[in-house]
Length: 122
Image (cartoon, rainbow, N blue to C red; front, top):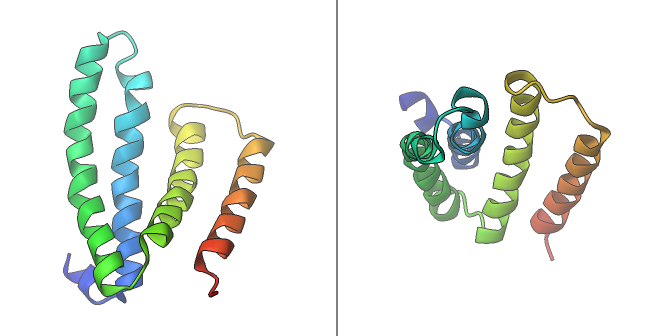
């Protein structure tokens, strides 16, 4: 964590949210591959275990972003959504074997618009 403390607060926020999102994505979707034949409640328990690490990164990331970096709650939310899409698409393709779809590009462009509108001054 010492490396993170040398970064600007906004970058600390983004790094923590990226790391938390990797855990979140595995918690939400990893069981579709790893535990496909297991009962749903075992998959849920495993997902909860993984999600703990998500929260251990997401909570400080959001706090740093809000308290030190000066992000608004809306800016944090849109940042999280952009990170979610950025993590999910490679995960779906590489880990779950989903094909690349043009819809991912359109969704990404919509997110760029969301970032523009939420971060513009005015």
